Image (cartoon, rainbow, N blue to C red; front, top):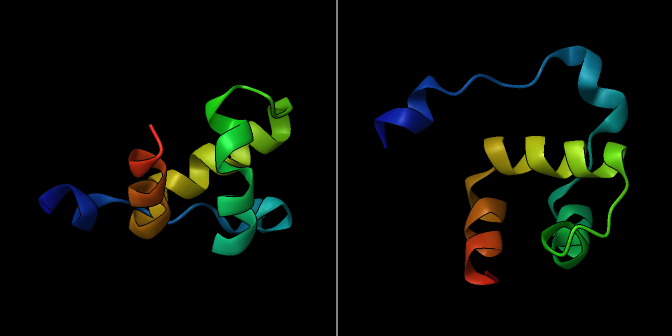
Amino acid sequence: MANDLNKKRPPESSKKHRMDCAQIRELLFAYMTHDLGDTQTLVVRAHLRYCPDCATEAQKNL
């Protein structure tokens, strides 16, 4: 839990690439099977780093 408190939010400049949790969850399978393009991969990876709910969902699907 201590690590969660140390996480910083993505910079404001990344807002143009942000997706909400529903969009991220739709992409999880493609992300995990390496079927996304570079930009979407980076967006999903960043979201998972800062969203514990989506990260948990990704872990369930490993």
